[in-house]
Image 1 (cartoon, helix red, strand yellow):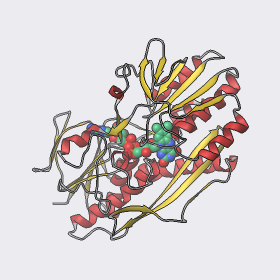
Image 2 (cartoon, helix red, strand yellow; image 1 turned 135 degrees about the vertical axis):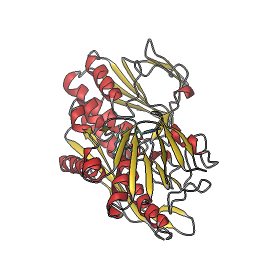
Image 3 (cartoon, protein in one colour; image 1 turned 90 degrees about the vertical axis):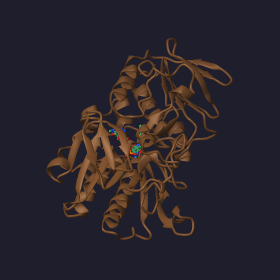
Length: 393
Ligand code: FAD
């Protein structure tokens, strides 16, 4: 009987792992991918859709490549129960699956209950922090906003998915406003004390391109919202917006609760980064945004894609009764647009440190753009098309 690996979540982490488990085992390991959505919609590049520079079709991809080229069994369903003792998994359809190894890459779920009045109001106050119908909704709200209107974005306390993502969004909304609603205002309400990534580059771009259009306010913790009047209730004042985009606090996708681990805290899952295993539940691995990140490791699609390769290699070694690689190295590259025609990047390298038993940044490796440029917008497009191909084709 050939070994069977079940992967939950067909996003950056899960789709990549499913493909590489098949490739690196020469098709010897059976792989089933459970994903609740029929298609993959990319969060990277989704801010361009909100800004009206790209379409949903350009960021939506199917799973045919994994099925037809790589022999992954792709099942559109939701996991409802996991029994690590019998290594069995149950789906909403009633199907039961037995696994030798289980890999979870479920991404994030939101904690709207932490902001009074927010839960159940994501149609009036979209987050658009999982690409899909919410992206379209926010784009339509922006298009319908009157000239002279206020588009307010609230950013939760770190850690959250994609540290530069909210500031990229503010830039692209401002780019849209500059062209279509020049009297509008983009208000960035940040619960953090500072811009979380590429600070100097964002501030330079905002000063050059969007002077008077973007206003940045740090230390603005959101306490509650009124969905009907689109009012943000902050610690020191209330702000009424025409479009209110609240990115709620986040936690690991709820499916992680089903493994019954003490290493799942109220937000993230601690993993053994050498193998991506959850140490107190045999045969279960977790990667991607759902994990308690290693030091200075961002919750990014590149990172999930890289962790997927660490996980796939470790799973194949463990299935063959071999130890995982002793010193995995991963890297991150994250592009951000500051306008439809200009982008910049940050890059880092992370090596597994045996003494600390976690990934640590390699000092002196990686870097940051000197300035945002059109050439980097071309590179950002290439990055997206390459990583989508690496996951799905
Ligand atoms: P995901 O990609 O979210 O995949 C999780 C999958 O699991 C989902 O498809 C979900 O449907 C499925 N799932 C969850 N629970 C279940 C269940 N119980 N049963 C079945 N299926 C389930 N990263 C970059 O590297 N570069 C960027 O430029 C970038 N830009 C971004 C811009 C925005 C606006 C946002 C929001 C994010 C951006 N990111 C970027 C971050 C990136 O999207 C995430 O870090 C990445 O998606 C994490 O991968 P993942 O596999 O952990 O989760």
